[in-house]
Image (cartoon, rainbow, N blue to C red; front, side, top):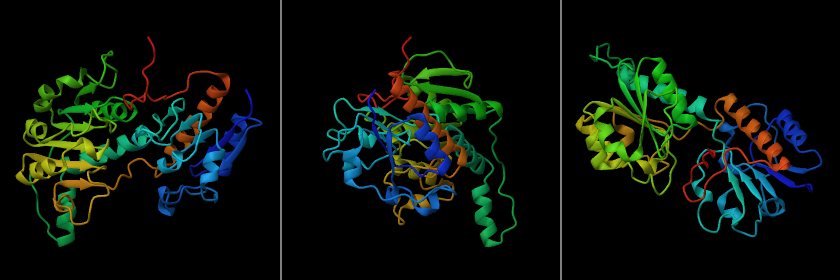
Length: 340
């Protein structure tokens, strides 16, 4: 295979640069920074300074490892392969962003650890009323806020059993929950769940669940999936978690369900709109735990290492002419399923 031009747009340490270059000897690499995508607070410690990404860099590249702004890809870029550093790829599925024959792969497998732990943290905060006790602490109020919930003995409905959903399901199962998984296609029940259903069964499953956890990607099929009617179907006193995309959940219906007490709480790392405006009422609902889409990113060092390792593995596969890990189906926005 002829030597390729490889553009890397994630923060890297010296060791990462050496590892990537060693995976493709003789290929030319450029390491570039993507401004606002990686503010100083989100950059892992020890990463090297990188020149800012330019349109010339994008035009030069045959392969891009990292989330190049979609607006830069429709301007004469001719990538053979784009490997994102995110699990979500919706920006690259729009018409005119990538060429007809461009391969697209995502970073599924990098974020399950970090995001599942974030989800568990939000869930325990809500079940144990820690967010309400924090409010009481700020006011100097020493008082009991009554009964609390537990993961043990609860029914947890996980929408999406990929890397993130599977890791969260595994943790809930270990804590004594009955875990029901929902998938888009029929496959055997994985060890992380007690039972698995198709998305078409969602309306029957929602009333059974004490916790509904959304880990799905943002696609046309998942747009407004948890609308007002389905939020109304959820069990009284249930908890909703969303780390997928904000567009999956009707935000106003969620706020109404929290304010009425129909839902005991919600933990969201993604919102619609996003960023959530300072004036939005969701910020001020006591039983809502809101984080600004930071459960993944590079805040956990292990996530950064896993992303680099996925890049290295796929570079080796690309050179060998082997199928790439995490190749995305443009028609669905999901990873292509392994052939039976």
